[in-house]
Image (cartoon, rainbow, N blue to C red; front, side, top):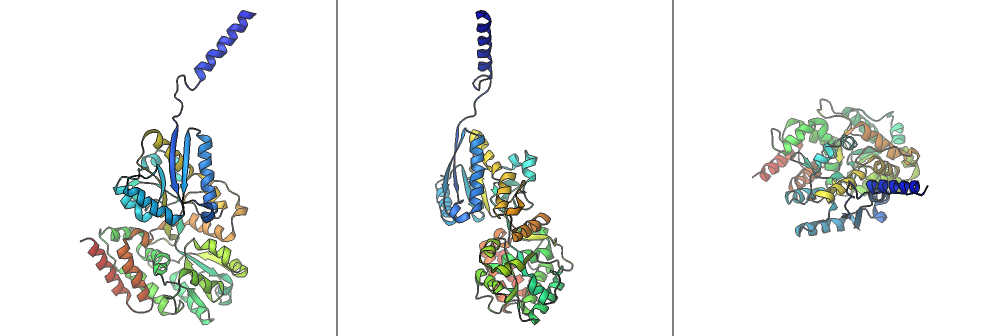
Length: 433
């Protein structure tokens, strides 16, 4: 009996030895990742909560990975990234804004991840169309988008529309102009506009309106000086369409003296039937807008234009802030990829959606009761549509200065659409010298 017991004990001991991590397989190496980010909960709210939940999942599933966080507000982070980049001291993971990407990539301070994304079709399929545009250089993807947002949404008061005899939102540009005339005849401002800081007319209106006429391929040809120019008829038509709205009194007369916050106030006070801004305005609308106006508010996109080459469901937008990793190798790179996958996975997308934030990925199963009606409307527009380039994300700052200041002049009749197109093209050609 003792011999049998001894034999059993010996067998159990051998099984334990052969199945232990130290026999026949290596234990996962311990890795520390420093992560510099801007997910400060007091500022970012639900997005920061979803972010930390994702990091906690990585920690729980990978005990060998230690993530050390350094969280700063957005502007402080921007400054710190530039400072650390100058000394080649950036951490393993960090958040990078769009206008720093060229510098970071050219100095090899970001590692490309396109091979990892292409090797995992399930991961790749989770991203929304168009969110990698800014982070892709020479065919290589250098990071994952933190969030994605449209810069061009029409917020409209359906009760004012009904009062003005407009049963549904216009499906074409000509129908929109007819609606503008009806709204103006009733004494309302058709479209509240606050273009004091110049970017609203460009980022929120022209970027989408121009795409309706030109299509997206034209934009990249013009940007890269490969067979298209800003003086081409289709682009001039988009400028003319915007000028036509201004000429028929679609906007408030003090449009160049108000900012985007003030344009909302006109709408909140029921003096205006519409305003055009990006998805970031949804949160403020839910917080600041009178309840009756909020209940009457619907979302729409700039309608189709006659003879246009762009898709009527497209909207300017995408991502301009990204989670990126340094030029890592080996175990650190593998660990960093795990973090990036979790920050772009279905659980992260679901949490963001429940917090009424806008992920760059398709969300997993989420509690629809937590999503506000207007956020739900936005999500439906995104599901049916796609993102097209935002001019001030894609073009140089000097060229954007010409576009923005020119639009401000054009909207008050100080310059014609053709003259503005010539100015834009001249600046674009000057940059190539």
